[in-house]
Image 1 (cartoon, rainbow, N blue to C red):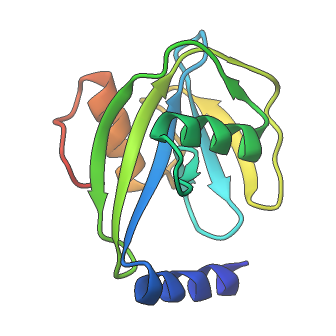
Image 2 (image 1 turned 60 degrees about the vertical axis):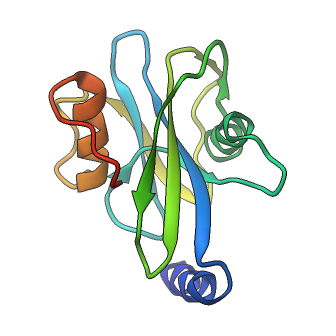
Length: 148
């Protein structure tokens, strides 16, 4: 999976220099946030994925969460912000949404190795720096930055 991910990243750099993605900060009733571990990269992340051609951002995040985790985001889905993420030599932009209502049970698949809810101030040690920044912003303990 890692080699496939690296090959895709190189292809993306050459063929699609500007990309658009979505992520969701999904909170349960206890105020815990859902984080995922992918099969192809290290660390815990907020769940999400790519935006398809002619797809609205809110539709994309709902689709990605349903496809990757088996959850249906219900109710309002406010956008937190759009972030610049110049990773792997591409110009990536990520739209972050906040969700507090959902239906279904979490399932994992070939792409999502693990998924679990954590208190935002007590996330696993290998949670990515970008995810920690977003959680601090959402919790009011960190400044908003435009960089993912």
